[in-house]
Image (cartoon, rainbow over all chains, first blue to last red; front, side):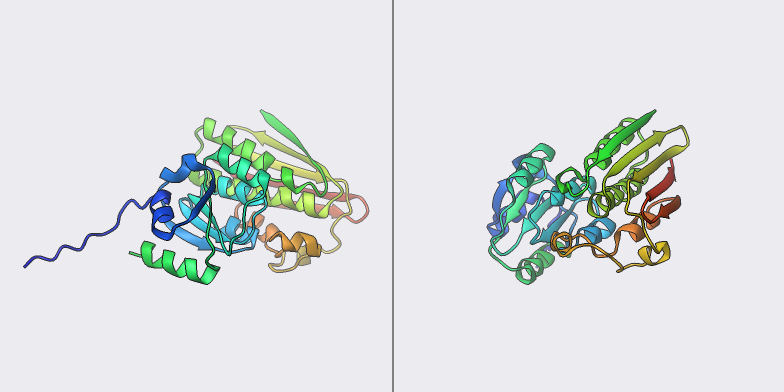
Length: 121
Length: 136
């Protein structure tokens, strides 16, 4: 008998949207962005200092500085927790940059745990 | 080549304008991505500092063949104790600014970590000049 363990490689933002039923608020052009990992923080300077390119940022901050940081850090996408929605200028900036803003009703702990399980391999 | 940006006190919607513009220029100059990543973190933090703490100011970016130098000159109120301001976790930010996720006392330490040279001059009642430089 042969057991093949298929490693999920090349995870894209769209795969996460599908897997977790995330709402896509904006930045659809970036759904093809490849996801290398995740970062969780509501402190903007913490994300600025420590997040890495290709990561998905999980936060409850919804103002447009979130997009300034996502863009400067080349993040794959932003996930807003607990039903938060992006401000209008946040969504506009997300469209301009092609970095999706996604949403979930889950809280930070829950979505992070599920995402970690998916990405940790 | 140099670029200048006015920074308006309290206008967070414009924070990130200079860093994003300078990032584009550095990409065009084909500067190593690792170098770009560091300098844009420093520039963004410095922009936010001027928006959050000063009465407004100006950012100037100077490009030469060896690297990039950024100067931020604001119109006050000045920093009373620079050593204290440099400490991680120390902040004088308002509650409103903190609610936005700023004001965690990580700005200046982030700038220091991501620059090759850094100098701060400040006089209370006059203003602060922050200068930093990164090499390509």
